[in-house]
Length: 205
Ligand code: PRP
Image 1: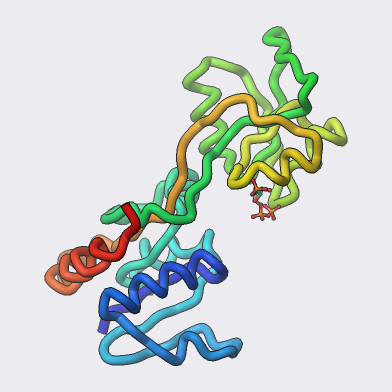
Image 2: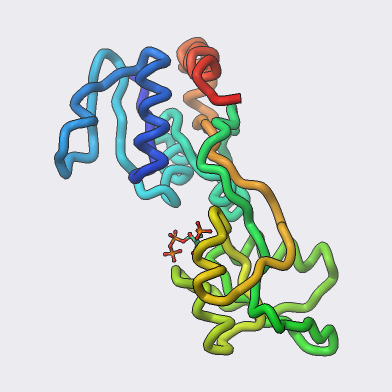
């Protein structure tokens, strides 16, 4: 049995389609239901909150899974990153009000869901910051003067645009990654390697 943690939502459904084509079908997963676990023919899928996939894989509740590079960079889980699935693409960027001017005499107030990524980025630039950790709707922070800038995911750019914000700097490109638990990779090595090979055929280049 191979246990696979998939991120719940639109990305997870696209990921499942690749896995299905690659030979890991589990038709019941497509039925409308509130179920979270699906099993067929030696594979067991779980629907997991996207930001939790890496925890399930790191702790071995799942052998493999699919997590965004943003989550891997933020939480630095002790897992193997095996494949870039070249989907769920977006970037981590610094954004703020269009008239924002950085005053380097002052500590920069940065609102973000990703304090580790933001902290490392500004440390690399030797810029002193005050991190304001939020859990969503980050774009509100500079508008209400809770922060000077935000560090957040930009996909289409629509959320920034509709809130009159502008991206200033790109920090890193993000995409979905196929990850493995380290112990599973040792003990289920041939299955996981085979899975990588089968999936690779269906990744958009
Ligand atoms: C993410 C991100 C931005 C938005 C970017 O939020 O935090 O707000 O998507 O997408 P766009 O560039 O295509 O507009 P999410 O939908 O995860 O909700 P959140 O506000 O709860 O973080």
